Length: 422
Ligand SMILES: *Cc1c(COP(=O)(O)O)cnc(C)c1O
Image (cartoon, rainbow, N blue to C red; front, side):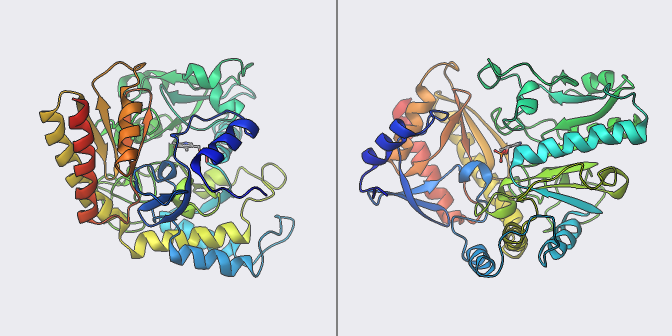
């Protein structure tokens, strides 16, 4: 194996031997700890992407690391042809943690979404009585749910779709954050589910109206349609509560504070459920829904393996013990206050929006301009890593273990760079 001694060398190797399916910032990282990343040359950065919110618990979180190492020395994979002694405890732990009867473990987020789609369709045929092959699932415009052929079939990102057809049918697209459009789509008796992100992360951190999710839940319930929440990016304390559907509740773990909690019929989790150590995703639902899946009808070789489930249990413990939701909520407010002051002062920054520590600053330039990219390059030079999404939007999502002092230092960096572009 070739040893990497410079960023340039690593980038050259990726360019020569790797599929060109990403366009990364030219930074080559070799170490991470908490809120920090270091590149091959030893330069330190604040991480403001957190691997798309997968490392909420901070890079190389020592507790999760220990759980991984210990389990890796005992048993890693059995397949589901046999039982293992970690899956059961994980299933009990995660269902109690989030308040559902049952869980179906998978690996990547996209697999979690695929699983939810399959469960919803089967439920539609076997419980709701929809005629075979006629089930429809409502989705929102500008959604991001992953990269499989079925999932990109209902994306409206041209780049994600073009020349990957023929597409999977059975999906109906409506505008996001529009209850009237949802109610009208729900009039169709063949609709079995509405799949939605409580905040659209990839689209540019679009936060809907405060009561949107509550109204979604009520409208779906009224029509016997499953409300599927994709919380792969928003879940696990990122938005200042355990889940974005928890509304303004800040308790760590599941509770029944009905005034804020809007329970989905199907909850999809991924990313931070394993703190960035190992791909784990999970689909949670109550018995009436989950029980439509019978042996042989769905699965995955790695889904529910002892290594992943042990890591996930520990990663969820860390979120609770370190009160990450509260920290995200408190720091998120400070971040948006400081960014708002910056937006008021410099016209190059148009607006700031978000919830908890999932935020975005919109740059005052066209979507096809390179300004946001250039700003991110300058931020990197100044020791802070963030990435533009959709051309002119910069997402800011640090690990949730950040301190207030560190956050202020980061706001200083962002403000300095923005002032230079103004
Ligand atoms: C990242 C993401 C996915 C896909 O997860 P992968 O692990 O990349 O397959 C799905 N939905 C949302 C909301 C996401 O942010």
